[in-house]
Length: 465
Image (cartoon, rainbow, N blue to C red):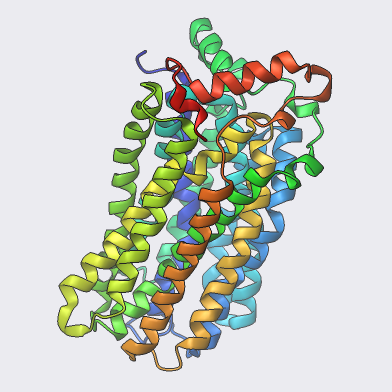
């Protein structure tokens, strides 16, 4: 009980997620003033397709580095890899204004390298979570840390309007992101830890408590990743589908919402910046509401872990699907309704944080990092394709009918992907989590039983899935 080392690590990682999202989202916010003549700051006449290219180029690097980052984190420890990646991304922030001066190609190259560095974030954080988070608190701590992504997005979108209008202009956004990144990384090198065993300040009782409830063995650095078993596992493909669906929807909205608000709803840049951030605050707050509910239902034995993951993932993808269908029928006259639906469409995504997002750790505490690398890498491809699909549909950014098609396609992706998760998803520790030597039927049976009952009393409903 009380505030322990795991909570301190959690807060560090929450802030780290927030700052790493500054590096990722600053271009989405800045691209509006970068292409409009505002007093004092330089501006560039980039076409719609050049802007789409700049927004998607981040993901070319991001996709490539996921799996290598997961393996590096496993080999050298996630603390070093995550800290270094954040420093590199922070330094790159300072070069954005110079790159913009020399043209679209330079900006794209810089975004690709930023993506390469950012690719380390999720696999590293997942590796750390598998070591630090007891499974009784998996929903709340994991979701709390990852909600840093939403709060980071929201904060950038809110403050960007003020930064753009200050004497710094839009370059200020990149300078602030860069400075904060380097500052956080130094703190994390000093105070972060790969696992409870190497933490600076932790009580013996807390260390034993965490180690008994994570199911991640301390010798994992030497275990080979069982790639063949992972790629033959139906539960892995269910998880992959859910991850792809979430990413498609989330990035379509993240990259296109400012455009939709200024062209269809006809809102100006400053109110646009505030309203664009609203959905991410909603999602961040809902993450913190949903996750304790999920943990409570599981720890009381009301529903199995598998049922919980599927239930919350369905809320998180089918809820937004309904909102997007409604949004397809809105025009500038129904601004308030449109903004409400957009806020809900992103906000209800929070359900996924207790769905697919923790599922890697459910399936395999030992290999959660490398698995996150694979699913986030493949899902990352959808975040390249999604803005390009939108770019192909939107020949006229003011036409609500074209936006309707964009929203319907996104809804369709949610429908298909979550259905696959319902069909194939599981939340029990998979046999391949353990090294072959320990694979006596006994340990295996213990693991499966521990997981499906969690800490709860046994009952027949555990056997339904």
